[in-house]
Image (cartoon, helix red, strand yellow):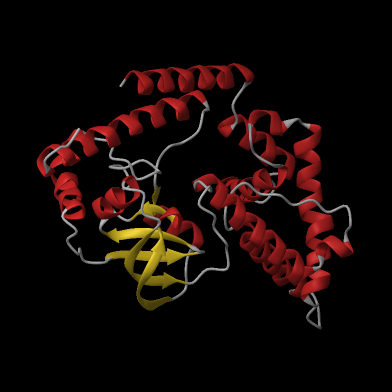
Amino acid sequence: MIYSYNEQVQVDFDRARTREVFAKIFALLKNEKDELLAFDDIKSILKPKSTTYKGTFPVEISLIVGSEGRYKDFNKRFLPRYQHLRRRWQRVDMAHHQNKILPAVKLYEIGGVYFVRDGNHRVSVAKMQGAAFIDAEVISLDTEITITPEMGRKDLSNAVIAFEKERFFEATHLDVLRPECSIEFTSIGRYDDIIKHINGHKYFINIDQEEEIPFGKAMLSWYDNVFIPIITIITKENILNRFPERTPADLYVWIVRHWHELKERYGHDFSLKQAVLDFSQKYGKSFFDQIKEILRRIGFKIMKRKR
């Protein structure tokens, strides 16, 4: 069937919307996310230190994984998610069919993938029409983390945590000095917190010393006399059961902060074990609380699917 340009762009948009609907269904069946990454979220995770203008050149569309401002309007395949996008999308599609040259899109590059600054509809139409590349003006943000198109926000967080862990042990050699050492976190920035704790421990040790002890000696003292005793109490009291999906090291950081707050409020006689139990009672979830939370999440997912 031969369509006019006006008819063709309407057919193209309807086809794109149909594909988006099926993609959403398949994502629900597989319990996968079908959303673009939000650039500001990723930037807050990776914390780039510098930017570089790279100029204009063809970019592989499959490496465009997110958007700065329109990440809710398109799915991760850049298919339009809403009918209100029709008019603008069809205007871009019309230019494609008429072989009009459109301005280059504007992208951020970080970790090897790209995010749209301007030109989300142009990317969507180009991908829908089977284009492999699109001309783009690119600003690159510096990061040591490599990103792949399949990675989601949680994957990126895990990659950053793994990088921070590697850098921590390379700098401290704690895993060599204490081979049984296991410090795992589920949040970004916690290894920096550990360095601060060691330096704080070092400061208090040096108060009564004529000569300042080295960082390495303070680190081992911190590990043996602060970290391990707290982890031991967490283990013996089964505290971790009240904090699903968290690690002993996660609880260590929170408990130390809580202990300091309690000592400031009630005096320095407040024991470490009291602090651990108080933290667990105030912030932990019982088995029944966890069941209610699971049921609440299931209910939320069902309501979201109905929409």
